[in-house]
View 1: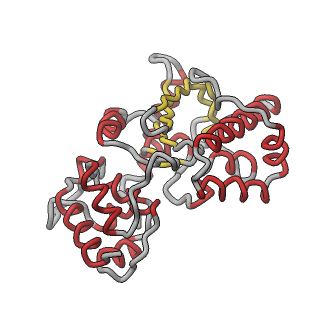
View 2 (view 1 turned 45 degrees about the vertical axis):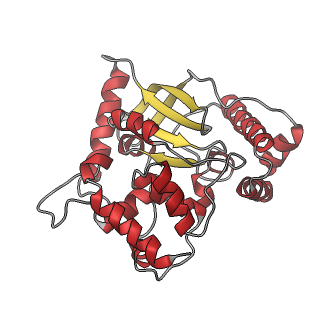
Length: 285
């Protein structure tokens, strides 16, 4: 890794990026127009200390995932993203591995949905990024690390989600997730992170092993399905949950909406207000 050049470019790109362009609230006077270090760390899902060490050249082996997250958070174009990967000593991820790439055009779409709960997943159903309304609705995602960000793990091993399912619905949902993961494994046989995920889930979950070995395949969920969310402050909220697939990068954009004028719409709005109020002090390191 060209550690000094990597850190210099990250600082340069951070300095040129206006907080309002990435949805970071601005309060009080600022010495510079660009992003603060703690703001970029929050956007990228890494610690401020680690970002400091990267920028100062004291950490010299950022993972592919960290580089991708920094490129996304800095809103880098294709050429700049390629440069950042090269400076980190990595080849830019190719078509034979699962992509976590959010292109500038897709990011512009996400920006237009800034007041709507939205989460973006890769083809393994690992969370790439979620916006503030999603965190307000479904619980904070910024502190999730590693396998904790994977939906298969969360539903079979971890704490689950705020979505309410009957036992039959939950079983069908789990089967759909794992069937979709099987299709992903067939598309990306060379992806070692995907192989590691399957191996880890096989150790942690007998349910995963049963479903994986059954050989069943299928798509995850109905693209127009409705979900009921049990929110701790406002109670049950029934929403439309639509999933769009960006074919070029094989990522999934999950969007939660309510029919205007309904009680569910009012509850969703209240949940978002309450959740964003808790974040009014801005990102935390």
